[in-house]
Length: 510
Image (cartoon, rainbow, N blue to C red; front, side, top):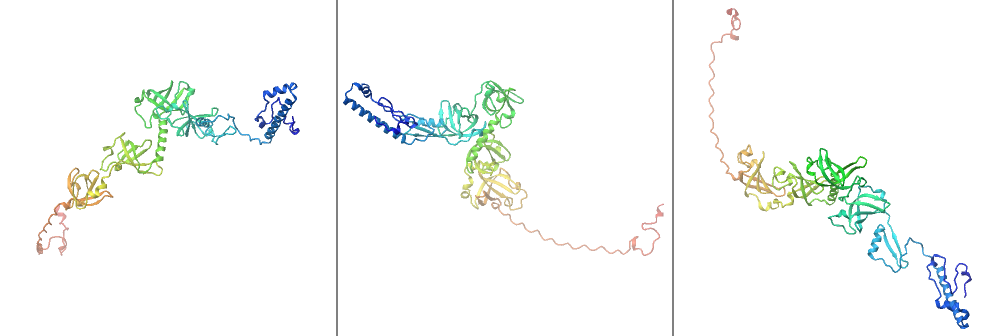
């Protein structure tokens, strides 16, 4: 056997009854060469083999050694591949799409790539924020990444995956893979690598263990009885209390109607030492209302037609619940006809269809209209009514300046007080009264401003002018009284001095 002396110290090659061994990492994966059983037996019996056969075996051994040396040299000279975080898998095994998706979900949404030649699977995990930013009760969004058993796994954008019990979808449709849903953080478990979440309306089942209850949990409770302060409830086998101010969004006077009902509430205080469990239905309703308000405001636009429920009726209008946010309908936007009070057509709890007419800049005030959801009778007013047309209508109301006449439902005209009669009218009610049916003539039509002016006096005969009163003959002035010829007694007309006083001698009266 011929061998290269330079390779002998570090690259020993065994003889015909040995296996080629290497010490480097790359050489361990090289193929091992062995002699066939026939060749080994021939070499064992070399003493009894003919010289020609022995020479033939030696030539074969030299060829095998030469091949082994050549392969060893090629392995030593080949570059060693860079070490990567990898896992060996059998070369003949291929990952199907389902298995690849499951591995991807289990590794937190990292991208998986396969090296076909080396059978290496590498996972690139994206940078994700830490879970320290999460707290119990925080609302976040998650993408459905895996449905496994009774749980749903979510990609929340953190290093840990979210886990949601599928039983919270009882009676509801389970979202498909890739769907984005809103969830609330319940508990963060770094040791498990999981973030326990629940649906905003999802309920947790609580047994009689105080360790299973904590503030922020949404649970079901059964109302057992009422007192002056609120309702006594059972949360599982634990006794709790629902204050009267936390029963509903508005104060409820009669709490007895809730006895025997099953309510969904939120735990606001759970004190194991004091055995104190306080729950609130109002807190849960406020959260749901705020979420619904945010959802509605994100899509709300002027001109939209929505369904609502009348929440309260005032003298000047009505408030309508749009399913999470309130809007206001002014009395002038309720009907094309004139109404005196909103209660003539609306009542609390009534379902109505409304149209959004105004939205304030801060989106705190939403103006609604009921009448604009129907066809306006004024759209055809210009083609139906014209100047000098005589119409018949009913007087709906009178004012100090005139009277309003209904020509058809939703269309009114007005008679000014100066158009009621040819003579001067002091009071409108001296000529017409509410509920009276009259005939009048149209003077002008303005369908844009929704105004029609009427006249009643043009249909009346103008009275003849009154004859002037006869001229009065001036009376002759009376003759002046005759001049007195004899002066008056007393006073200043006496020229001679008088002995007595102005009104006589006082001594005459003694």
